[in-house]
Amino acid sequence: MAKSELDTRFSEFGTVSFASVTRVNDFIGHLQNGKLMGARCVKCGKNFFPPRAQCHDCLTAEMEWFEVTGAGKLVSYSTLQYAPTGFTDEVPYTIALVDYGAYKVFGRIDGSVPRDDLAVGMTLKAAVSRTANGQLTYVFNRA
Amino acid sequence: MSGKVGVIGVGQSTFVRTYPGSIRELVFDSYSEAMKDAGIVGTDIDATVVCSAPEYDKQRSPAGVIAEYLGLNPQPTFYAETLCSSSSTGLRLAYSLVASGLHDVVLVVGFQIMSQLTSVESQERMGRGADIQWESPFGTMMPAYYAMHARAHMAKFGTTPEDLALIRVKAATYGQLNPLAVYRKPVLLEQIMDPSSFLGAPVATPLRGGDCCANADGSSCVIVCSEEKARSFSRKPVWIKGVGAASAPVNMAGRDRLFGLAAAEEAARQAYKMAGITAADINVAEVHDCFTIAEMMAYENLGFAKPGEGKDLIRSKETYKEGRIPVNVDGGLLSKGHPIGATGGSQIRTIVMQLRGEAGDIQVKDPVFGLVHNIGGVGLYGNVTIFGVD
Image 1 (cartoon, rainbow over the protein chains, first blue to last red):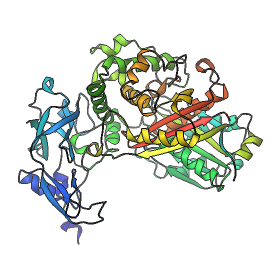
Image 2: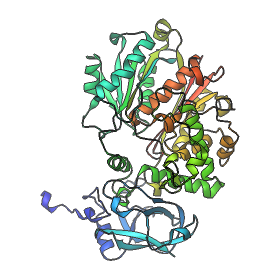
Image 3: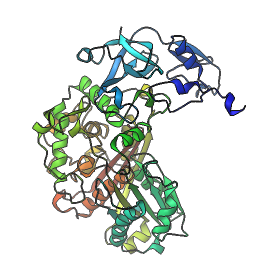
C-alpha cells in the first residue's frame, strides 16, 4: 500500500493526537456518526475499552464493535490547573475514569458539569463531542 | 558463580535545577564518587548498564557516549529504560548478570538532564509516558494521574489533603540535612494548606504544589559485584537480598483500582519472598515519593500499614527517623528533586549508606534490612529491592 493510501483518521482524535495509523480507525468513523464504540472479541466475548484490533487471550483478530451506552460510575477525577504543551489554552479541565462494569472508560468530564457537583461514585454517561480546536472526542455528562 | 551479589560502591551528583554541562560530565560526577567509594579502577568493571528516560536530551543511545567518556571500552554497555524506575531496573539487570556468573562487576549509571526543556514541554514528555493513542490526547500529565489516585484514596479511606501535606513536611525536615538535595528549605503544613501560597496552589486537584516533586538534573551510580570479588575489594559490602519487579496496565481503564499501585504490591511480595523476610523486618526504606500520595500508597503497598491506614503512620510520625519504619529520611524525591533516570540509584545509595552506618545526620539506629521502592510511570513499572548487611 502506498503511504498516501494509509488510513490516518486517528489523527482527528483529541486536542492533540499523537497517533494516526491504527487498525481501529473505524473508532473515528463511529465518532463521526455520533457513537462511542468499544471492541468485543467474537470468540470469547470479552469487551475492550479502549477498543483493540486483536484479542490477547484468543490470539485472534476477529473483533466486533459495541456501543458504550448507559451510565457508569465515576472512579476518580482531577481538575488540571496546569497543562502540558498543546493543552495550555484549555485549563482548567477535568480528566476522569468511569466504570461501566464490564470495562472502564478514560476521558474528560464536560466543562458544563459544575466542578462542585463532582463526587466519586456519581453516575455519568459518555457523549461524542468536539474539542475547542474542532477535533473529535467524547465527554462525560451527568447521567 | 555461587553466593551472594553485593553493592561495593555508590555515588550521586548534587541534584540541581540546571546542570551547567552535558550528560557525560554529569554522569562523571557520580561515577567518580562510586569508584572512589569502591576503591576500584575502570578495568575492574566488566559491563555497564546506562539508565535514563528518553527524549529529555537529544542523545540517542546514550550508553555509547557514556561508556566512552568513562573509559569503559571495550567492555559491553547497553541502555535500560523504565521511565522513573530506570536505574533500579538497571540494578535488577546487573544483579542478573552477576548472579548468572556472566560478569563479576557491573556498573549501573542513571542520569537525567531535564532543564533543557521548559516545564510544560517536560509535562508533555511525561504525558507521553502514558498511552499516546488513548490517553495523552486528553491532555494528561503525571501530577493529574497521581491526583486521580489521591482522590480515589481519599474517597475510599478518608485520607485528607492535610495527611498528604504531612508527608511533604516530613520530606522537608530531612531535605534540609541533605547537601545533594535541590529543595532544602523547611515546609510548614500551613503553607501547603494556603491556596494563595506557591506550595498551596492547586496543580491538579486535589494535589497542590507542595504535593509534587520538582524536575531536576542529576546522576547516580551503583557498582554491583559478585561475593568473591566484593570480599576482596570492599571494606563493607551491602548485599542484595531480594529483587522484585512487576508491571500494570498503562491505561487507567485497565486498572482494577486507583487507591494503590498493584505493580508495587506485587514487586514487594516477590522481594520479601526472595529475601525470606516480611515488611516488619525492614528497618529503613526509600520510597518513590514523586508525589505525596505516592508515598502514602507505598506505605500500604509495601505492608508498612494496612490498606487505608497509611495516614495513621504519618500522623503518628512513625515514618520519621525515630519512628517504627523510617521512610525517605534523605528528604525523598520531594526534597532531592527527581532527575528521572538517576532517582533509583540515589535511593539505593541512601540505603547502602544507611546499612553501612555511614548516613551521618540521618543515620537510623543499626539497620539490618533496607528497602528501595522505585516506580516508573504512574505505577506502570514497579521495582522493590531489599538490601541487607549479611
